[in-house]
Length: 140
Image (tube, rainbow, N blue to C red; front, side):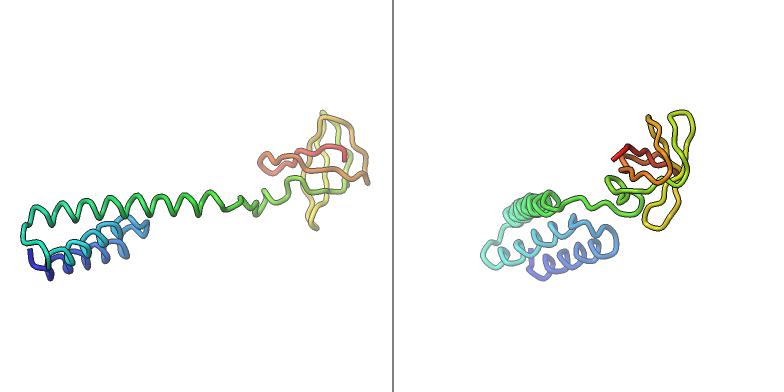
């Protein structure tokens, strides 16, 4: 097959990647097409060019998968929004008992809070979990 056809196929896969997925799926086929375009200068058999395209695409898929796993496994999870409150401290503004929720103040905001023990006003507590809009706290 002519090298220009392989370049056209590579361009189509690149356009698909940009417009449709953005997940590096079609990039693998783009790479395979480029390798086949280069191979078409040296090989005249369409069958061999298709085998080269398939092999190049599969190798690039495995390499991209390996690199993306390394990138995502090395990144530490950063808590944001409400989850950032877990393991921080708060001050009790309304008494908390196992049967009655109270209120705590943390980061300048008032939150409803629950605990399995009695906690008096003014005590500092640690936020252990969040259920809906209620903080689960424990004595510090």
